[in-house]
Structure formats: C-alpha cells, structure tokens
Length: 453
Image (tube, rainbow, N blue to C red; front, side, top):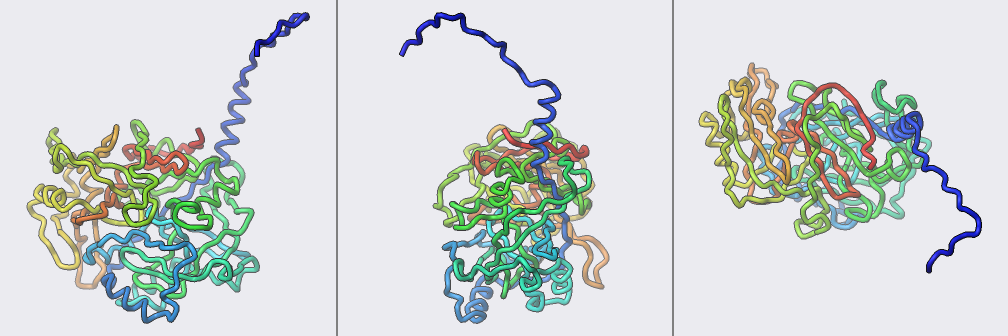
C-alpha cells in the first residue's frame, strides 16, 4: 500500500537520544541485576575414593529402590572413565556459599559447570577412609528440611533417585525452599549485600552418598535440556535477578584461596586481559555423547613453551580438533593419550607414582616463561606451569614437603578442561547464545558489569 500525502504539513520531530544521565541510569539498572559471589578453593584431604564399580555395587545394596529412575530421566553427570588415581583429588573444589530456608541454613556447594542438578547434605557419617573427610564434610554446613518453615517435599511429583558422577554417586529426595545469596559488600548492585529469590527453588537432599564430600551447585543447562524442573541458573534468571542466563567464572591463581569468583548475569572486566572471544558450542544440541547437554567446545591445538624459549612447540598434530568440556568440578585436565604423553616428554623428571599420577620436581613452579597453551577458534589461552602443575600440601605426619603433580591425565574419551586449565582462563558461559567466551586470566582488581547484550 502506498501512503498518500496529508493535506496538512506533517510535523517532523527531531529524534531524541538519551541523555548521559539517562544512559548512566540505564547502565546502573542493568548492573543492579548482577550477582557476584566468591569461590573459595578447598585444599585436598587426600583420601582415596572407591573405584566406580565399587560405587555401583554398594549403591545397589544401599537402597531397595535403587532401580528407581529420577524424575528427570537418565542423568549421568560426567561419566567418563576417570582413572582412580586422581579420585583422591575430588574434594579439591571451588565452593559457593548459599543460605536455604527460614531461618537461613548455610551450606557450601561445589560449583560445577559439568552438571545441572543442585543438591545438598551428603551424609557425613558415611565418609570412609579418614576422619579428615568427615571433618571436612561437616565444616561445609548442612540443611535440615524440618528446621525451615518454608521447606516442602516434592517427592509426590518428583520422586527420589540417583545422580551419578565420575568419582561417586548420591541418592536424593527433592524439596523446595527459599534461597538467599549474600554478596560482597563492594558489589556493584548498590541494593544491599543479599539477594533472596522470591519463590522457592527445587533441589535435592542426599540420603546416601559415595565419594562425595559436599553437595553440588549444578551450572550446566537445566530445564528443557537435562532435567524437567528449573535449575538454580534457570531460577536466578526466571525470578529477575539477572537479565540473561549468563555467568562468568575466574578461579584465581594457586595460593589465592579466596581469589575466585562467579558473576551471574555479568562479567568482571578486571579479571582478564585481551579479547573475550566467543566460541560456539560444538554439537550444542546433540545427545550423541552420553545423553547430556554440555558446554562442549573445540580445541584445535595444544602446545608447550619451555622456560626461556620464545618457541611454542605443538604436542598435537596439524589436523587436531577435539571436543573438550570446561568443567569447574574436575581438578585435572583430561587429554587424549597421545597428546598427554607428548606433553609428558617436556617434563623428563616426571615419575609415575601410584595413587598420585606423575610427580614432578617442584622447582618447575619457579620456571618463569613455561606455558601449556590451548588454542580455540580465535584465541589461545596460555597456562603458566605454576598454575598447570597441581600441588598437594603435606597432610600426613611423616610428610614435610608439597608434592607437585602434572595437572593432566591421559584418557581415551571424554576430554575435560579441568581446574588446572581454568586457572589460566576467564570464562563466560552464555546459555541462550550457546557459546562459551574465553580470555586470558589476569587479576587487576574488580569492575563488574552486566553482560546483557
């Protein structure tokens, strides 16, 4: 249709752009919908976890209803064949603290980008092998449903079931309750130091666990992907605390137990240098791997730079391209076997030690200029040797020195970018865009802004 000219001259008001004050107000409103929380690194207790087949056998004996599937359907959080020699490091994790119920009960949960379900309260009396495990478990807090006036069981609509992990398993019943997040006093929101979700949230409460010293805060894809109820990430978005299903993670450097942080709905501009490069998820909506939607991204090269050298030598071939999972819930980095042994050749002093992995001379921690580098589409992350090498502090009475272990493990499937990689990177996970953004980690202070748009 062609518009006809009006008999009256049409007014032509000038286009009005927002003023600087209005733009600042809009930015502040966006930034008020950002939730920044610290991640605290836990040291290892170094207690061996039973092999996976032992877990399967024990859990069959533990519950008469162990064959009952969860209401979410099959839900195996990473089920790679992780070698048991590193299972003792499963409690070396980055914890996030939340408060549940009324009155509030605090718990510290492992922040895990490799799983979606959140659950609390592994039975501490079931910890085996050492009193250190039980002591650590109790120090992380607990949640008692009957002690909360808002707690409500939802087992009539979402029955109990198993959640399996690479180094253990848990049997949970489901509840709904209020959840509060307390943030740092210098948070940019300016609305106080806590956020309380306006509606109750669903989560699991463990009645049995094996190899799990703490509960899990699942940060993978939730409702519509891996489960049929809203995850914590979904609820934070649905209830308006953030503008997008985004969260960014920095683990901080070794020795900085409180340097890590997670920012829901935003990024910390002073925790990285260089570009924040978006990497599309590979097979982003495919269940072909193990029936679970994950943050798979392609690694196209891995290389090593020796201290004092300007040459980065590849340990992968020219056609290398493999899917890796950036997983905050896994300590080590899991590499293809050939790549691992090529990497190992750059540490000739490494010796295989049962129950440890490959032990190195700790002098490598002081080799400045040594890097393990990972190349993705458009960016390379350089992880310094002193971040990639895993340090086990003295625990037993007859030990005096830190033990240093190469922060990688060989595997024939399910490749993982664990904490030994993530300590060198800043990562932004954008669920609605199906991308992971990576940048080189650097701690230059704090400046948190919304990632919206």
